Length: 344
Ligand code: PEP
Ligand code: MN
Image (cartoon, rainbow, N blue to C red):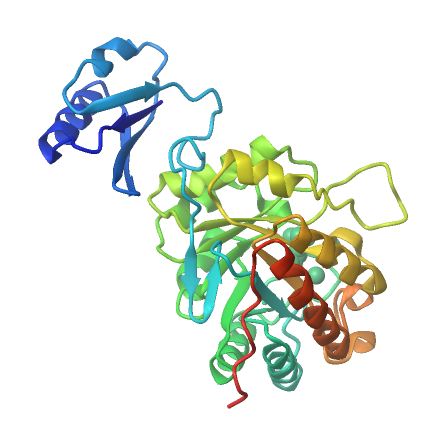
């Protein structure tokens, strides 16, 4: 349920409504955008008589929301969420480029990747330090040492950093290193992890689960937000279908669908969606044309020797060429790709 206050309502009017709701044991979340106060109400709202609130002073309208996600819904917050991390603006008019290797393998590999993606225009450096590998015998990541390298590379090239958190026990250790927590597809419904991330104030990127519906995905965002952390972005990374030529199937329709349902930014990861290097650029271009707020792309200085996901990682030159094409596509839909900063 959402209660929209009139523009001329007083702070006392808002307080009165809030107190009445809380007295019923309901949770209340306030949002102030475009001079309008909106109260988002969560909890057992079914038994609430809407008329009890419609008649209170200062109330403009009471709207029942039929979707189970509240804080993530556009009904609660009509204006799009904009998240700022270092030089990246995610969810505004810019298309945020996040790029880097699947995994941090060494200092030289990560420094090299950071330098090249920054020169092409990326604003966020990706790199896993804890890897959710299908086999326990595959390379599992460098752990904290990997995060230290990632942060150093990010700092040197003016890039924010994003890395996957796989478990609640890693959160506090990771906090000093990362600017954005990545929740992987396999962990999208790890509700304990989502709740704990909601207690931090570090932005969270929630990847769509391998077989998750859009509603389930938005409920995962809701878990983080219900803890008080509203800096959440969603990442479409392909879903499992019957198709076997590609690693997954990129659900491009999720971009406009989520934009209608939610105010949260939508990032697209074409690398894990398709799994084939040569096909990453066409998907990335399609995603930007469809309105994606950002891209998360695997780029490796030497993909043939990568310890993880080399076959889908772009060569740095391919990434630079892709960005130059995106600079033509983005303005066609009223978006921009900010220029790369001069290299330090
Ligand atoms: C990744 O981005 O490194 C990753 C493991 O992706 P996903 O969770 O989408 O499989
Ligand atoms: Mn990968």
